[in-house]
Length: 278
View (cartoon, rainbow, N blue to C red):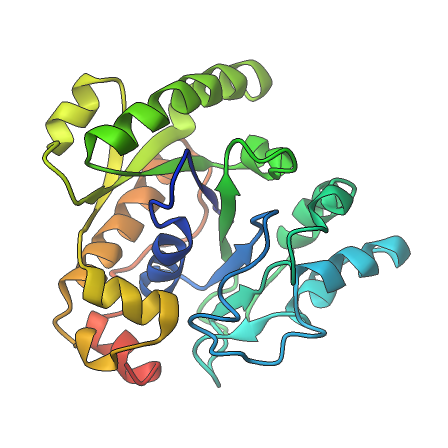
């Protein structure tokens, strides 16, 4: 299992949209966990108001009082690719007032994730996990997940405002991960190429860019709001970029010796668009 945590500094650089795009193009079976303590956005966006009353992170937290295993998590997930169920999502909190109660969940949640599998003989290994952690400065950010992650990616746009906002947070994360896990190299950036900064310039200011996604507002809006479906075609630049970014992030984890199992070429952008009717 590979655990990838996505987070951000100030503003709205697109963590949830990036996490969803990576999940849809991930090269292995994958679970997207919407762990933003400020509340989930997928239900009102990409999931278009789907019934998540009993299938969300808060329901998993209630279950932990009586013990928690992989089946408990799987039962509260939605499939992004029915009937295959190789791309799952655990919707986030129904509101912004439950984050404080999740702290006791994370250790058992991590143990259960290690045993989560999909019903596919081709993929006997546990699924990979992508986590939307929200903003780093939230008082109830899921630090336990971040500390356990194989790769922590700070989502940043290539603009002066976004880069300057991210720099102190990146330095804090680097120091924290180095002290707690001894793996400071696990901290990287996922850059959305919106502004005038180049990827090379981002590296020059101390941000290790492991993955890039193109700035494509139309395609991003399809994923964030499920609107304007014609904006996400089989040749979508955004989905192609997401597929490349997903492979790069998993390769980064493999180089540190944490990701397990094979990582083939992934799902074609056209196939993702077909499965989700985009």
